[in-house]
Length: 350
Image (cartoon, rainbow, N blue to C red; front, side, top):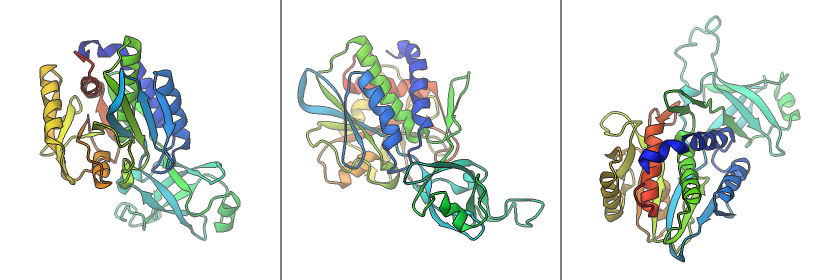
């Protein structure tokens, strides 16, 4: 299957671009879930939404007991309106853990509770080199940054008149680009690239006529970045494969061209037997892979275990450079991740 994966390259990139274009900071699921629903149903999956806005996609198999589970998350990093100052500047609190220094100068959109959208820019409190002595040195954090709104606002009342209130989401422009050399660069590759991997895997199974031995249940969660994405799952799953980003950097073996298999993260080790099985499948099928330990990482599988589910879980993902900043991965890493996911689902020779 890996040798044939390039035939699905265009489908994958069109899918991930559609997902990345939809704003979805943790908890704001409505827009992106419409896209997930359409794509899931096109590829033979049933779609349902949990009460807190996570999706359950079921690809039918020969048997319906003890389904095979997989999960990825569609929620992203973002911000929320904290207050509005006397000049009409919007002060914010982070949603999840974006590297705030990378937001300086980034475009964003404020979404009101009634659905109005207003453009803006994240800026330092000392944004002009010709005016502020500390323009280069002032800390880039939530106490020293604000959002400049692209509307005629001169005070807090002007902002309120637009319908903007404390608690409104601020969505960061993802700036998605697919290069001719095969790189996907964008914010929020973590983890919409993995959601696109699951949807592409479903597309491959449907177009090839593959019927798995058991139902495959794929969760698309919306609270992973804040720690409780997969805290609810169908309780009859036989196993859970987390598909999330692989880490690239110092003291790590993974590159952007590999599927990463995580043996341990900040919450502890992943299931030994399932992780070993994934390593064996990757080796037997000549996938480009790396096994790593992530010291500053947590996943939906960890949230599942914290919630008390007695289900073996493992974690894989395409290697992603500069996570929680301006991220990048490569088609080769994505293709290896899709292939290993299909092998886990029982597709021979993936």
